[in-house]
Length: 196
Image (tube, helix red, strand yellow):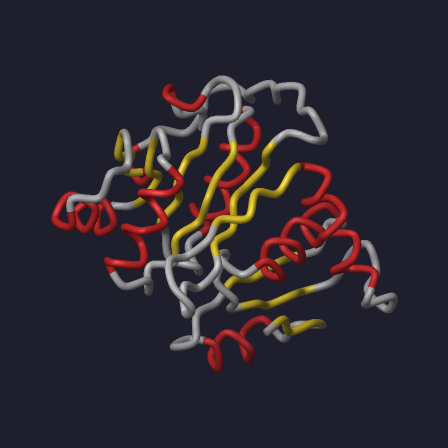
């Protein structure tokens, strides 16, 4: 997936998808592969908080689903192009990743806004790699395979991103849940690690 609007420089793409959607993680990897950066919005954000984040981030596109696209239009969010990822056809050939500058912008994470407007923190690819290494190094018992990790943290949480990318890089099976389905998913997945 390579959004046309986000194919050069340090362009920012906003992502608004449910935390248990596989498309959320595909969107993040697709944006990074395209050479752009991203900011995640949690579907549970109130419209005002999401609007504040989008106004600050000035994304060239919003990757979302039909519900998110309708919400963005209804709320009048300033998002650039709205892309319903459920309508994107699978790639017919692998995309070549673009060269990445380690100090280049990878993503912007926003504070919750409890003390005022949400504030964006820009993190580089180096930050992403370092945070992932730190997140996984705290669990020396984790191997490089046969690990089943379940998490339900939103991708607006720094630890969720760090552990997610580190686990995928190590070949772990990562299952994403949500609070409403967590108990059933725990029984189904039988994780070796539970990230909260």
